[in-house]
Image 1 (spheres, rainbow, N blue to C red):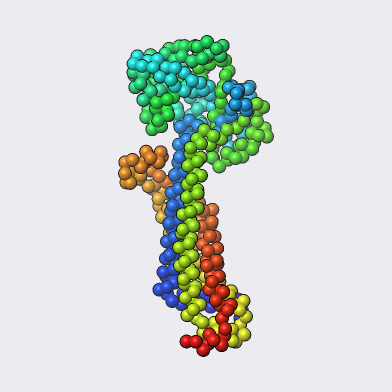
Image 2: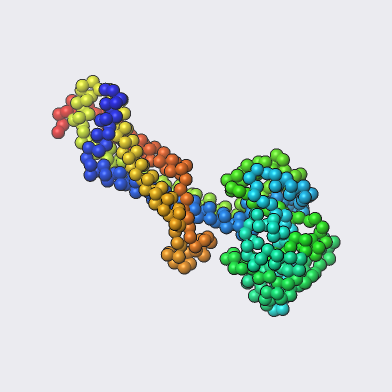
Length: 403
């Protein structure tokens, strides 16, 4: 029995009962479609959450002092030049971050003050976009979120006193005119952060040239591991490279939880697919006992019959995978990946609970399609083993006699 004959027999056997084969194909395709859709929605959500963390102030990474007890980046001008030469870097922004105490006409509040130059920060995060104009953040202004401004009882153009610890030790204070940020949707920025011009902050604290961190923006987030390796090799002494995960540990933990849920979800889907294929192959072997018995009696090697059964399973799996991948890539990637999923359709509170944009864009990648397809083929081969075991134990004479 040639391999070509085995392949033809396998294709005929896989679809010898059309209704049963169609049911198995639909089960495989539907399972794969659900898996691709859920994975696409999950990957899209994760990508948008990471993008939000990066855009709202974290950057893709930061260069910070190597020792936790150190506050300032050593030789920040040289470090900034090295950062800008790293592969894939879109921009770098020197920052001065410190705790400050704000006094306004209607109250007082503590805040984390971040100072930067708007032209540098614009290449790293979206923070400057929440100003009405980049020049609004100058030497005599301080930018506040709406909630913080409400607590201080100050309006745009009102005067605020900022008090902070100077480099010499005693408190330093100065007055600034308030600039109210556009709504950011981020509670931390709205209620607990204030933004200054870098030179104004240095003058206030008596820190000419002082930098506590250098925020980094990349052209492609996928190049972050390469940038980390490059900094370890060629980076400035006394500094370390801090990826965005260190600033958003809760997002990293959430991603790990979602990946675990994905594995459990995939296991359930593959179990259903496996049951559909196992049922079809078991019935196929049972109904064709006489056919297999006759082939064995004619001298066909049992190994050839095993190959026939496995090929039937793979033919069925291949057809289901092709159908499922076409549906998954078309619906999830080409359609929803372009138009997006409007979260408002599922209730007004879902967007706030997820902490992402109003429109969610699923992502379907070739690697995900190939991985899902490979698992279907593995499951197809594994669930065929019981049917193959029955075939190995088949007695040709008994199979031919039994109706």
